[in-house]
Image (cartoon, rainbow, N blue to C red; front, top):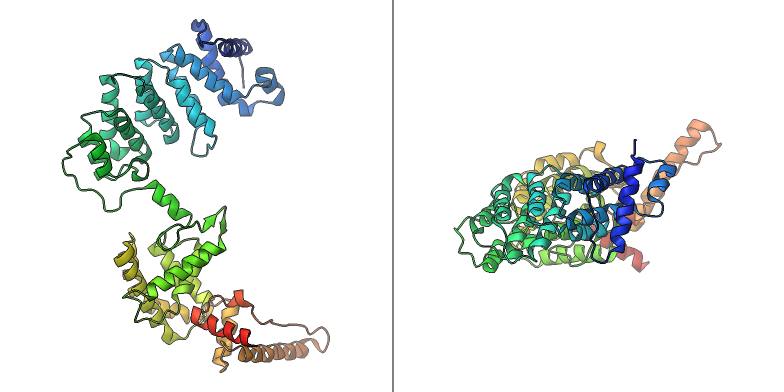
Amino acid sequence: MTVDGEMIKIAMQLIHDFDCESDGKIELDSRAVASLTALLETIAVCGEMDDITFDEIFGAVDPVEAGVTVLEILAKHDVVNAISKIVDFIGVHIDEDTDDDFLFDDIPDALESYGVEGIVSLLEHAVSGEHNERSRGVLIQAVNQWGTRQEEIPDSVKKLITHGLDNATNNPIRINTDLMMLVVDWELKGFDESIEKAFSNDRIDCGMAGEWEDVRRILHAEGVGFTMPERPYNSLRDFRISIGVGVFSKKSIFLDGEIQEEAASKYLDDAVNQFASSEEGRQIESGYLHSFLDIGLTYLGVTVDAMTVGDVREILLDIFPRKVSMEAKECAAVIHELSAFWQFLDRVHRLELAKEIEAEIRGMLAEFRSEMSNPANFGMAKSLFMAGQAEGYEMTNEDDMHRFFAEYNSRLATLDRSRMGNQGANTRIDLPNESSISGMSLKMRKKLLEKKKRK
C-alpha cells in the first residue's frame, strides 16, 4: 500500500495541536482537510501495514482513537465535504462484529458538533442504506445528540426522518427504531401516521422503543387505527429466550456456551409440574415430557419458548429413536402427552408457535412409531436395552439388567475364544451408567434409581 508520508505527518500534527487547544479550534485550510481525510483512509487499512510503517506513522498513538479525533476536528470546523470519508471510516470500524464500546459512545460525541448542513448529510447517509446498519445507527445517534441541543429542528431534518419511516418496510428494524426515537426524544409533531404504520408492519423493535400504545401516549397521538401484530418484534424478548429465560425459567440456562445445571433442572421440574396440574395434564401420567424437554436443552440448546416445528421433528424422529427406549404401544401415549402439553402452552402461555407445533405432533404418530421401531436408528445403549427386553429381561430392574449384561458378555467371550483360541479374549460390554440411559422416561429412571438407593 502507498502512504503519503508528508500528508500523514501534517494530520498527526493537527491532532496534536487540537488536543492542546482548550477550545478545540485550530487553523484548517484545504491542504489540512485533505491531510485529515487521507489519515482516515490510512487508518482504515492500518491492519495491512508492516510493523515498521505502522510505528513510523502512529508510534504510541492508537490509530482508531486518532481517527475519532479527526472526526471531532472536522465536525467542530463544520467540514461538510469530508462527510463521505467520515461515513466510510465509520463503516470500516463499526460492523456487526464490533464490540468496542468506546466507538459507539465517542463517535456520536465527535460528530454532534456539525451544523445543520452536516447533520443533514449524516442523516442522508443513515437513511440511504449504503452502509451496514450498525454504522448507520451510530450516525443517527450523532444526529440525536445534536438535536437535543436545538431549540427547533429544521424542516430538512424532519423530511429525512419522514422519508426513512415511510420506507420502513425496506429498512432494517434497527434503523426504523432509531429514526422513530428521534421523533420521540425530540417530541416532534406530525409523524403519528408514519410511526403507527411502521409498528403495524412490524418494523419497529418494541424491546427498545416500547409498544405502539406506549409511544402514542408519549406523543399524544390520536392514531388512525392500524392493526398491530399479535406478537411484534422485540429484541429484548428474543435475547431473553436465547439465554433460556422464558415461561418456565426466570434465570439464564445458557451462559458462555454452557448449560447452567441448577437453572436447567428447575426449568424441567417447573414445566413438568405445571403441566401435570393443568386441565390438559391432569388426565395424563407424565412419562416422556421430561425426556423430551431434556433432549431439547441438551442436544438442541432450546427451551419451549424457542422451539420450532423443525426442532420438535428432530427430537421425536431423530434423537428419540436413538436415545429413548419404549415399546411400540407407548408411542401413541407419547404423542398424546406432548400434544396435550402444547395445547397447555397455547392456552396458558400463548406461545407463538404452540398451535402449529401441536398440530404437527398430533399428525405424526405413524411416522414416530415407524422411526422408534426401526433398529437402524438405535444407538448402542438403546440397542442393548431393547435386546434385553426382547429376551425377557426387565431392563428397568437393576438385577435383571446385571444378569442380561453378564449373559451378553459371556456370549462375547465365547465368541472370541472360538475365533481366536484362548488367547486375548477380552471383549466386554460394561453396564451402562446413568447418563447412557438418560433417554429413559422419568418414570423408568425413578424406578431404577429407587432400587439402587435401597441396596
